[in-house]
Image (cartoon, rainbow, N blue to C red):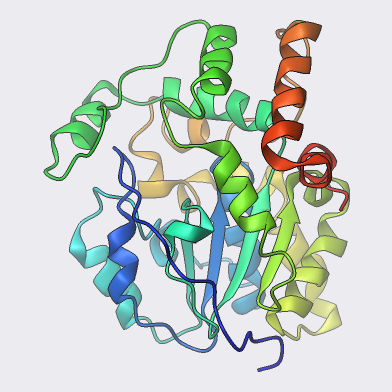
Length: 300
């Protein structure tokens, strides 16, 4: 396959928290056509998984993304889930939320990193976090192997929730800045492609064609309208149980809670100009002006 790197960035650390265990990648057996969808979270992960699956399976509506494409480094999933990935005979699509330097990367695989403005990420994350059923906290916190603080219900004030996330470098999840910067640094690797939520929203068909080219997937022209339709928000919302992790079980309201609104800018009427500016200044400080601009706009 063309576009394959001759070397891969090296893993330099492990990352553990209530959600993730990076060590599970250490024994991952890569194949030449593996696709890894990476994001911080709530940036269009499931959307991109569906895009890739629809391209691979050429518009097959029966493909259940939440079953074939698990969050591989999620700490609490049973071993059988990873074993099922190992046993798959089709082209594999695997999800991760790790920064690149905590992930084993292979020159045999192709990586899509999906990003979104951090303010939009956190408005979506709040809905995700606030929607957890009470028993889900016990699931995260009582399974052996927890490193660091347990996961607690979110602050009921979304404004404070966001500002705490900025001030405490990703709390109660993981660092947004190091996640974004680690993948931005690999943007020139031939087997890494940056994808942005804004661009998917603005031109879904065009971005899907660019992803297909990167993955070297040829699709008959007559099939494109159906494949694109299967990746629209309305289609995914109407079929949410096929896309939400565990069919939506962790959330009050089920899969409809997980696939929520799919829009940007909900923070504009909540954050003050000073709070928004503080986020932008930190983005520029932590990421540099070029990466910060891309993260905010999708324009490199």
